[in-house]
Image (tube, rainbow, N blue to C red; front, side, top):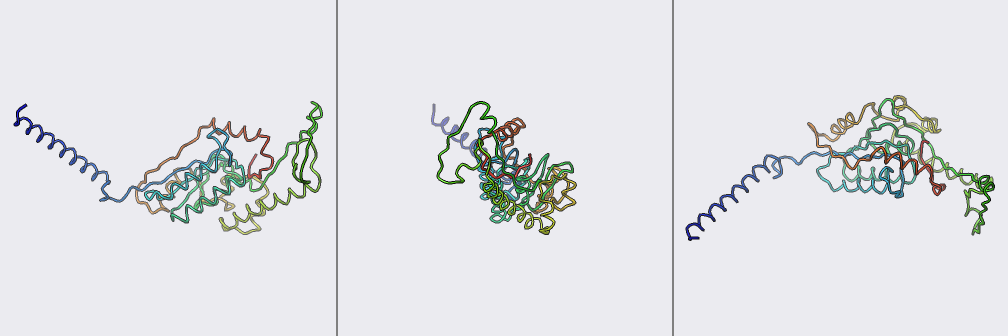
Length: 299
């Protein structure tokens, strides 16, 4: 290869490289990636679907508080994200897990100044409603099942079954309350009184949260907090939700609250299948080791 040909090839390669760079710059300008345009306005949607739980059960259908909190926490560093929408389709679940998600939403609002809107779907009851109260606006369909404001703690009485099949537990305990809820014996009156006091304390926290977040009188909330469920329309009349509408109505409201003109980019975090939700709900109902968990749950 002669020297002249080598020079020509170098020139051609250089021109091609310059052309690629120029095209990249033009594309970047068009897409706004050089910072000439405003950064993209993003809204993030997170699903809270299935029974709310703190533990891992091996199925994505459970609304695991650790996973949901991690998703929300990561958004605090995303400067392009201007708002958060929570799509809730849950009968509730663990009181502690519901409270943890609720607090994480409050932290997100406080640290970012971004609005949060909730879109209720089929069910947003008990712990699902508790979480929703942290939002700036709550949307519900007219036929959504919501409410179920209260706390439940259940034990399985299997004493007669054990007697029929010849099973007898032998228990050694360090204190009178250590085997509270033992399925092969009746609760004592003292144990019943002790557990009811605990349930009442968690219930009081639920009531006070609604009073504070929904700006309702304590007398009104106490009247509603007897475990009753409401349709979305009824909840709207009672002041438990703000507006009737579907998910996209809630998105429009979030854009308005975020001060976004025009459409924003809507990003969906991982969504869960109906099968996952059904399986996790069945597992939750059949679980024999969750007796000592306080639950905000509509059964």
